[in-house]
Image (tube, rainbow, N blue to C red; front, side, top):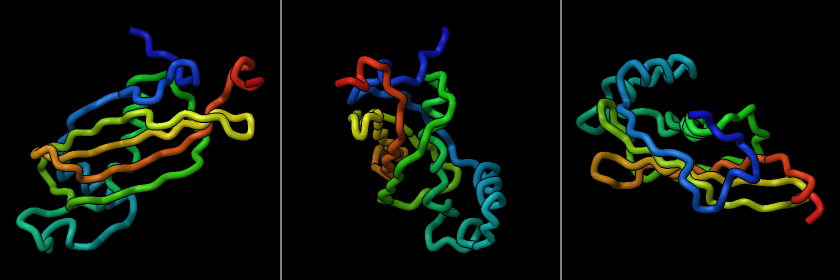
Length: 145
């Protein structure tokens, strides 16, 4: 099945872009920490919890990865990003990620999209919520309105 283009016309407010379950493995945690030069032992053995925890930003690229799984996207112009953290992120646990279009609007003759990434744990409790704002190209039809 061919993916649709990542365009203003193919998006609607409330649209679920994609959902997936992921297991936070030692490999993914190590790769993330290595890439950022994080050497804190709280991410390996000195966690105040029963299990090692992961950095709260470990899901930072997942929203765009889910878009790429479901749309033909050639990059985006990033405008803003915000995060809310609700609970620790544990190693060897399964997390559910869901990306939704939360806003579409026109400002300064450009299309803007705000997407929400909601990550919940195995108990269904919210762990992380992020809002990612990007600029989208508009068709002539939308530019004149």
